[in-house]
Amino acid sequence: MELHVAERVLRFRRPVVMAYGELAERHILEVSLVEGDQVTGRGEAAPLEPYDGVSLERVSAALDLYAPILARGDELTGGEILDACAAADPLPQALAAIDLALWARAGRRAGVPVADLLTDDPVYEVMVNATITAIDPESAAAACVAAAEAGYQCVKLKVGVDGDVERVAAAREALGPKPELRLDANGAWTVDEAVMRIRELTSFGLELIEEPVHGIEELRAVRERVPVRIAMDETTSEPGAIASRAADAVCLKLTRCGGISGLLAAASLVRAHGAVAYIASTFDGPIGIAGALHAAAALGTLPACGLGTLALFDEPAGEFAVVDGAVPIGLAPGLMA
Image (tube, rainbow, N blue to C red):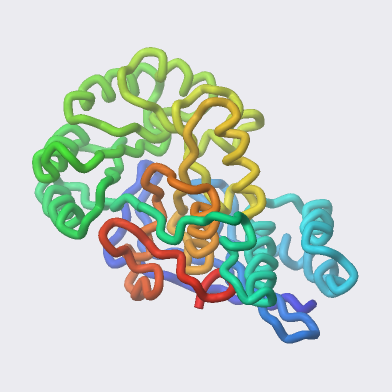
């Protein structure tokens, strides 16, 4: 089985301001696996160094180690291939690319969507949240009005930057009482800052707040002191985090979980320990979004997932465009048409 790797650059329509800086474009690695039967599977590695500390060069080096393993892939099952790659370099972002490509090949060979390989009863559309990137209150309010008119039932705002209270207030006024309002701080605060900020924002009717602080015990400390549900995001990378019961909900990322296989295992662990699982992207490309959507379809009804992010890029979202607040997974064999 031959491994081919190519870099792809996706440019945001407008820069995205995060607690850790501003993003103007997204660099990802697209991979393809071609075997003797000429059935191709495509995958994607989407590290985001400011978020996960993993560079594109680090992923590329791991993929180089996987190439000779994949070259003898005819002799191995999919699970054996992944195990061998993990033994060579257990980097989740690189493993995710191979996992996606193997699932895509399996679906194409079977002539069915990957979701049908994962479960007997998938859902065929996934509810997603609108991601509002505007920083000034007026622009945020206008974006919220547009999201509500487009049928979104959940809107997500970034916080942990200047003007949080004014922006959240403007968003809630624009949305009215019904759509859910979700905040994401990307770990910008200390425990005491998070408690103070969340108490200031509670009156705006929040669904949850993602990653107000980094760390298992820090999340637990915030959760015990505020009346809003707390979700874990970046902290899931810490050993034992998703089974820690430190948060009410856990945001899972396909890239961080090492692909579809790892994400489904992580979701089962989250649920077994009493928390709610949902899925989001780290501004992934189309193949990563496709894989996450098929995983979400296999998990059944979830809270709104952060998988409508292709709309933030210059390129059209294509088959993964959001319709009435949901994204269809498509019925083409494999992950995408």
